Image 1 (tube, rainbow, N blue to C red):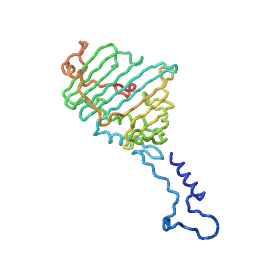
Image 2: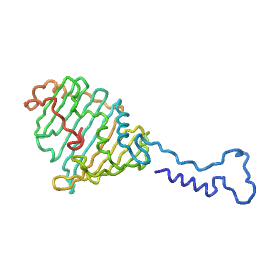
Image 3: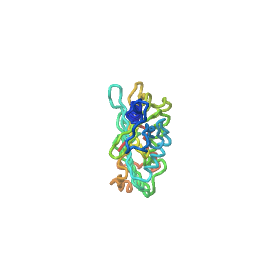
Image 4: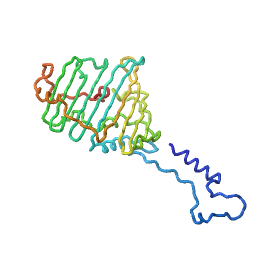
Amino acid sequence: MGRTPAVAVALLLVLSGCSGVVGPDDGGARTVAPALQGTPSPTASPTPTRDYPPGVSGDGVNVETLAAAHEGALRDDSVTVRTNRTVRAADGTVLATSRTVTRSSGPRLRYSFRTTGERFDGDAAPRTLTLWTNGDETAVRRARANGTVRYSYAASGPPVFAPTDETGESLLFPRLDGWNLSVTGQERRGTELVTVLDGTGPPANGTGLTAGRNATAVVSVAPSGVVRSYVIVSEVTVGEGTARQVLTFRVTDVGNTTAPRPAWATRAGGNRSGSAAGTPSSPTRTAAPSPTATAAPAD
């Protein structure tokens, strides 16, 4: 990428005689300054090997390796992962939005999922869902479109269905596998040299988030393999029309994230047999909506 001009300049200097190796064609011996006697003659340096994150090379990107490096680099650190999804009609009308925020610090995790838009107006799907756990207790708060708020509580860690992907790794491989990604350059952001990737997605072969057409992506990767951010833009079918879908992913506050116990967790623990609206509380086993099955992220 950015190293081609440097090599071209080096070769130009050698060919033009500026390197001091090529002297005048006088057929005589070349005079060498005493200070340079015995000094190796300069030659064009070989093209340097660029340091890329795991799974990334000048030939392409191995998404599985990159996702594993991302997970490994963040597994033992506190981190905040944010995702967003926005769907707009051709006239610019926002049809649906959703966002997720996952904050993890040690055994503590706080996850929130929020949706807005016509697609989520029914009472069946929560407008917001928030889960908090410290490994010993888990509290869940659900707020539906009709204003009903339900709480669930368990004196244990979260059940296996719960969205407890602390690092966001599950939003990398499924969303980018099969893409034609390549390195477009590297740029310094603060003290970090970030590698920027872009590419096009595979043909649509599924439903929901995997059904986007004409998809493009821009991905920023830290040297450790942590995917700092990505933006994926694609076309999706909504009803009988075509809409534009934008998915974003961002990792922040690595090493500086906290996940304090929310005030409503106490209420959830005291309302195991009822909800704020006076209706029976949802069982703790009720599966939470998947951010990849619905739309995008929440806070």
